[in-house]
Image (cartoon, rainbow, N blue to C red; front, top):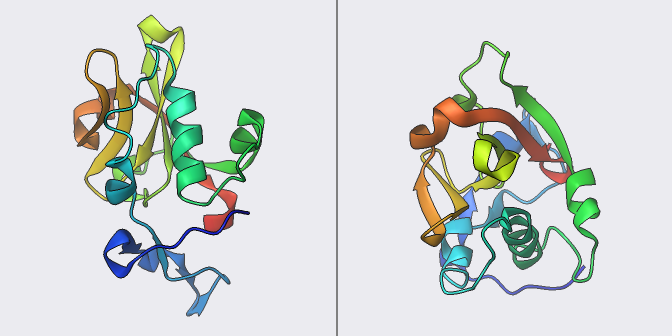
Length: 151
């Protein structure tokens, strides 16, 4: 994996990584997606390139090796919530979780990343890369997946 230097203001605390009173072997802090996203606001993506945005963000956060295949990203997650699950999905998410949204115009799905308990980052059809409230898209939510390294 590539080495990324991250300053203290570029990380976010993730207490959910503590399981049964002990760490899962992962750092207590993850790259702050809101800070990393700033480098992506001006990037040009095609109308249906939400997967490319997610892939690029995962590389920037150090979760994928540069040059990894997009399928490596797909294989790196595990479902933690599906639309028939009775739990509120917005209460189980943590930073870097994937949100799969229903989108009729994309042929079924649009993918986003959770920034924090309130917001997500995604590729907006007319506005490019944006951070928006997850609640705005709650009615379209099909699935939540978590990076296996964060489980």
